[in-house]
Image: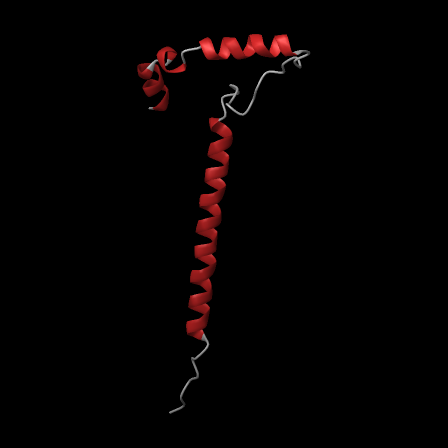
Length: 87
């Protein structure tokens, strides 16, 4: 009887498994990227700010500083509204 040389067949299976693994990772990446695009509601994010006028003199800067110091950031915070937007 003749003995068949089948040493290379196992490597083909390994190559197919690696190609499938790369395809699954690429598909998952594509799905994540397209779902991020669909989730964009068009509302401004925190990185988007309105354009402001430059401060011209020291008195204007002092007025803005007083306004900021008078603002009660923690008192104005509505915790329930914040929790609702996070959920």
